[in-house]
Image (cartoon, rainbow, N blue to C red; front, top):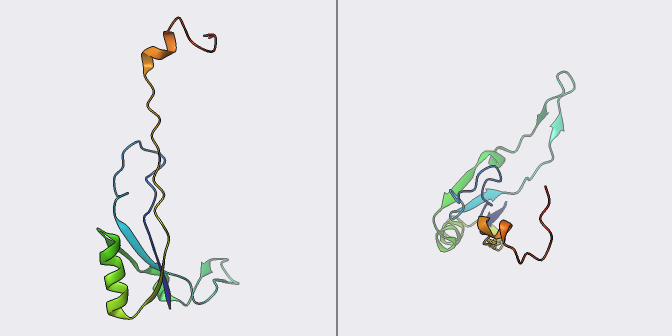
Amino acid sequence: MIARIYRPSPNAMQSGRGKSNEWVLVYEPEAPRSIDPLMGYTSSTDMKQQVRLRFSSLEEAEAYAVREGIAYSVQPAQNTTVKKVSYPDNFRYDRKAPWTH
């Protein structure tokens, strides 16, 4: 049973950073998913795929995994760089590219 610890990316549909500072521990699948022949649903016999634990820091997540004897791997956090853009710069007279409609 191997777990993966990572920090999820923020929601792409919103500009906020909600829930992007917490770390998540999820179990890697032990059994492959199977397709139900009658209905075509995808299912699995591995119930640990439903477990998703959230922690406020990486150290807490690692301490939990060590305490419970769970083998884990840490996926490093990817920090995004925010490009500062000013709206009035679109109308400056010394723009590098010509302004068109």
